[in-house]
Each structure stands twice: as structure tokens, then as C-alpha cells.
Amino acid sequence: MTPAPVDPFAAPEGVRLQKVLANAGVASRRVIEQYIVEGRIRVNGSVVTELGRRIDPENDLVDVDGTAVQLDTGKRYVMLNKPTGVVSSMKDEKGRPDLRRFTKEYEERLYNVGRLDAETSGLLILTNDGDLAHVLAHPSFGVTKVYIAKVEGVVTAQTIAKLTRGVELEDGPIAADKARLLDASSGSASRTGSSLVELTLHSGRNRIVRRMLAAVGHPVTELVRRQFGPLHLGTLPAGKSRELTKIELGALLTLSRQEKID
Image 1 (cartoon, helix red, strand yellow):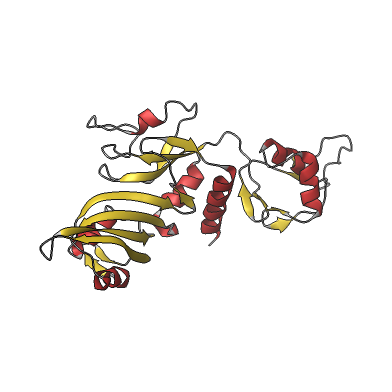
Image 2 (spheres, rainbow, N blue to C red; image 1 turned 180 degrees about the vertical axis):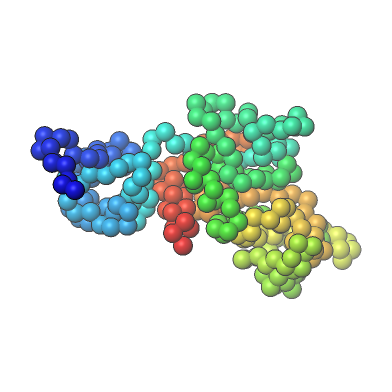
């Protein structure tokens, strides 16, 4: 079968890389051209050196200096410091306070990535990027989270070691990736007082931090998630939200793409 003749006047497929990255807010077209010349931009894992390179913004993956870039300007990424007493749902069937109050100011329809139980506060991601949400929330991808728990009793070094070696729960054994004692204050009796413990986990099992600490004899009285993957809660007050910075978003996208490839 004879191939169809090529129309020399037809517009080339795709959009110029410089234009796409400029629209995404990376830099000006002139600066991006310099990046291309310096070999700092990759498309689908391959370094681009041609200034005339065209791409498909809907399907091609682009990174600059190893950091992923979101080409779809319609995607929104928000960090929320979820307060206690709020369930991780956009509509709670029982009428409890939910996440809708924190998404009203955004035009896009946002959803939460993963969950925090009502009694737990801290970092929650809200987005309309379904692909990223799937990677970050699914336990098989193993994105790490850092929690700080206030617990009953004085935690010992032996207990910290046990948390990293592993404890047996009703749904199977679990071990913290990291654990450390931040502070402890003892009362008049050996089991009184309280401690602050930091746990790093990649498990997505339900109420896992609370169950682990209860299993070693230190029930949780307060719990906050301070970190999710490369994102840190910082000084964001409880009940407040903000959009991710370009650096934060780049780190998050880079992580999610690496997890999918691995």
C-alpha cells in the first residue's frame, strides 16, 4: 500500500517545547532555549538538544534539571493542615465536619489524597490530579509519612528499638522505617507522664500509628502528620491551606513519576 503523500505546508505536530514550558511558568522562552542548549531538559527521559523540538503536552513527561514539570495548567495542588474533628471526606454521610469548607475558594473540584482519621491533625494534600493521587495514596508505592505522637507514659530506648524491629498487630506485623524519642516527662509513678515520639512509615494501613503505639503500651493522646513524601507542614496553622510552591510541586511530581516507573 502506497503511503499518503506528505503535505509540505501542513503544520508540524505538537507544540514547541519552549512555549509549553513558558506557559507552565518554568521560565521565559529565551531562558528555556538556553536550558535546551545546556542539556538541562528531558522529554520522556531523553535529553533534548534541538531548539525546534515539539511535544504533546497531554502525554509527554518533561523534567528540568531532574525535576518534573506539570504541563497541564488546569491541575491544582493544595496543602491543608487538617484540624482535629474533621473527617477526610468531601461529604460525610453522618453529617460530621468534612473537607468541603477548605475547598470552597477553589474553582476546581478537589479531592483528598489518602486520609487522616478525625482525631488526627496535620498534612493532607488536596488535588484534582487523579494520577498523582493514586500513586501517593496507594500503599504499594510506599510513600513515606512522618508523624509526631504524644503518648501516655515514658517511652524508653528499648521501646523505640522495638518499633523499628516490628510489632505484631491483628492484621499482621509492622515496623516503622524510623522512630525516635523527641521528649519525655515522668510523673510520680513509673507509668505516668507523657512522651513525644516521631515515627516515619510508608504503610497505608488504617490508624497504623495509633495501633503500633498502643501495642507497645503507649496509647496516643495527640497525633499530627508533619510530612508527606517531600512535603513538610512547616508553620502552616491548623485549619489553613495554601497552594504548593513550584519547588514543592516539582518534588512531588518527580516522586510520583519515579514510583510509577519503579
